Each structure stands twice: as C-alpha cells, then as structure tokens.
Image (tube, rainbow, N blue to C red; front, top):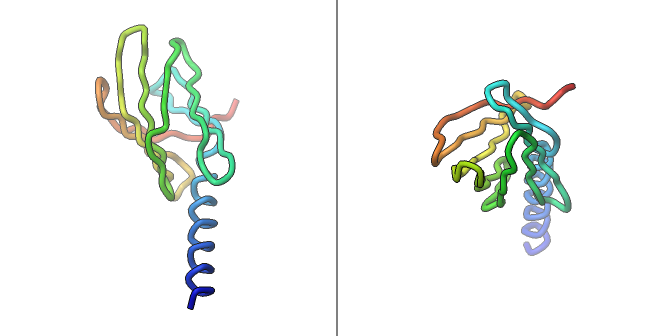
Length: 112
C-alpha cells in the first residue's frame, strides 16, 4: 500500500512539473509593451522577468499545477497588480490582472 501511495505521489509530482514547465519561455500580447519571461528550474518557476519601457519589480507569490501568480510593482507610476498566468490547452497563457489595472489577456509565445 505504501508503495502504491508513493508511486501515485511521484506521478502526480512529475505531471505537475511537466505542466508548469510549459510556462517556461518568452510570452507577449500585442496589447502590452512588455515581454514576460519565465525561468523554470527543478520543478518550479524560479523567476519571472518583465522586459519593457519601465523597470518592474515582481515576486512569485503562488504556483500550482498549471498556474503562476505574481505581484508586480511599477515604481515610476506606483501601480501595483496581482497577475495570474494560467496554461491554456492551445499553448497560450490566460493572464488575469487585478489591482491598479484589471483585465484578462491571452499571451502567446514570443517569436521574433
């Protein structure tokens, strides 16, 4: 019984990690001036970086099987938002903003 439980937990962890690894990479949406970069390491998203006109500070506050939640602060205008990135089945990200900006965007992988 213990072996079955251990095997189930291992498979769940591997599946969760594989789903989260799909977020890794560079993402964008034409409605924003920023490009979002996710760095994945050892089963979780380690860092989120935003490349754009202003310097943004961010912190990962939560992550699960198919999502990452961050807080973002733009020091220039003091805007703060909580952003949830969720993997869609069509290899896009549903990005939900709550705070000084409220809205939902679908991000695609960045291609030069």
